[in-house]
Length: 137
Image 1: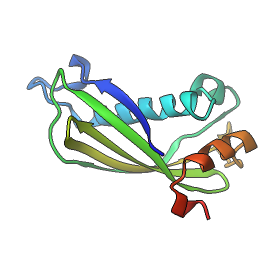
Image 2: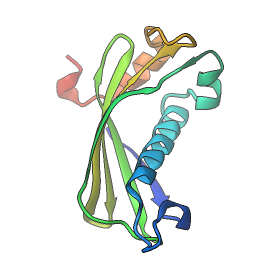
Image 3: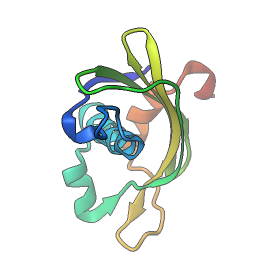
Image 4: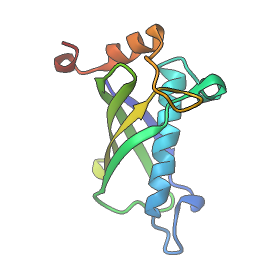
């Protein structure tokens, strides 16, 4: 089950030609991850980072077509693998029917000193519920 959110391309996302500057996509991805944590995992980042964190440990991205100032991108985040302290997700961004971005990343749940921690049981259950059926076994 994918978490979906609409992101308007703003002036701040673009280079002087009005095209999304690729590092801004990574900011958008992080915004989508924050929304996913808040809306589906019931763990807003402002609460998460008080005692712990979930930084990105690995990320890959492919930019398949340019996005322009004024476009509205639909981001879809799907968790694909849940470990003891990590979660891998796939993400796509479309504008209408056109694919603009594909990414995959791994987040790791950590304590303040950077050591990994097991996901809290309630968060683990919420992530498991979103895994594709084939990955739940």
